[in-house]
Length: 220
Image (cartoon, rainbow, N blue to C red):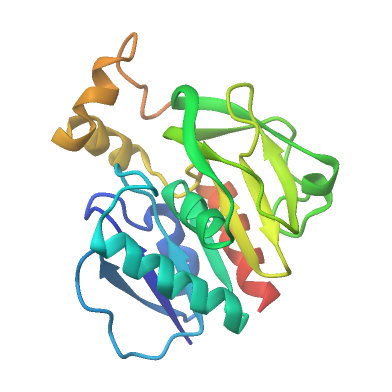
């Protein structure tokens, strides 16, 4: 089985999610924004983050929204992270907009009652610490189940149907990725707004990321 991964920057990749996918003998291939969509068959889709807005007037994003919309209509399992969660919400006709502030770094995520019972998150602590890097948020899509929140961002995770998830935080991020993101020119504005450098090694999300992706796979 194969997974299509929509990637918006080379440095924003699957990270901690790679090992569980390989362990399940699942293949995956990246599609970089602006490139022609491949004709390869895929059974599921992961939509990763990126520094742009889901509302940007970019041809590549419009193409992605169309592909995501078709996947949702076909019942394809879709997992969206950060920008990916916003793009899924937008494809479901929910509003995406600037948050009250930029949320960057390690911060607690609280699970709703539905989140604590959800297949992906059940058994996790509430709150559980995850990595964040975003300045936008979204309204909960119609028909979606609200699963998680943080002090700064109300909608941190949702499920739509049985196998479509939007996650605002970044469980996939490794310490090496945090260090790389902090040095990327595309992120300079965000980094300049921080009080100090991010401690990339403060927490290890590996086990949490593994649970999320493996349980998502088990749904389909």
